[in-house]
Image (tube, rainbow, N blue to C red; front, side, top):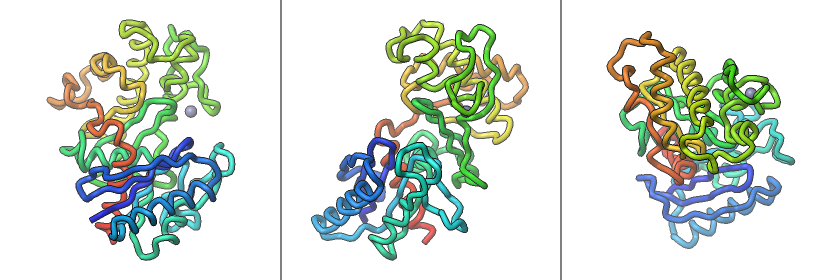
Amino acid sequence: MLIGGIEGGGTKFVCAIGDAAGHVLARERIPTTTPAETLRQSVEYFQAQQAARGEKLAAFGIASFGPVDLNPASAHYGFITRTPKTGWSYVDVAGAVRRAFPGVPVGFDTDVNGAGLAEHRWGAARAWQTFVYLTIGTGIGGGGMHEGRTLRGLIHPEMGHLQLPIRADDPLQRGVCPFHAYCFEGLASGPSIERRWGQRGETLPPDHPAWDLEAHYIAHALLDIMTVLSPEGFVLGGSVMHQRQLFPLIRARLAALANGYFVHPRLETFEDYLVPPALGDDAGVCGAFALALAALEES
Ligand code: ZN
């Protein structure tokens, strides 16, 4: 069985062919230019792959940059909604694939929810039914899974905009989010690190005070999410989390902030409670594959 996956990003669409085990058999990067051009090239890639392999794709999954409309009852279901990306507001991404491949199930979700679903199916969250996947990089996004299903609601979760108190010794006067003075993304994303310290995070040494402050904000956000969702664990991905020294710092800070309140053996040291993703650079594409398989299973 072959499935098609699209990791739809603001700079490129990665189109890939996979098998039922989530292995990437082929992939192609298509620049995100105009919706008409990018979607046409994506469809043509899959048509060419089908012809070359002599096999129809059984399902598609689209893990898209957001914001997106995930409400199946909405007229804009499967659309990217209002986005600052020029020309991409209210574009029917899922519909373009559905019209090109009639009758084939198409799964559609945020890139973050997709990555979380893939970590659940094949990666670091296989043992968990209720957990949160966070990506901390240029932006911050959170995908939640509750009892084996991705969390959706009126809109999709926007955990990057959790409101956090600024720490008194933070050199920033306010965070970098244009909407909120003090939110998770504004205080802990890659651009906030660069604004605060005048250089990019990956150029800062592992013992730089930047990481203690970063761990503080991440731990604070995790604590807030824990109090609401009671996840069995967190998968922490994204470019900022490539700084692996953050993991022990966050665990220690989380233990201090929790202050002994949570009573569970796994919440004493948080050792296996905060883990890096297992799928690495394939997380986006595997997310699309996981959405395709979920759509196939539901159809
Ligand atoms: Zn914000």
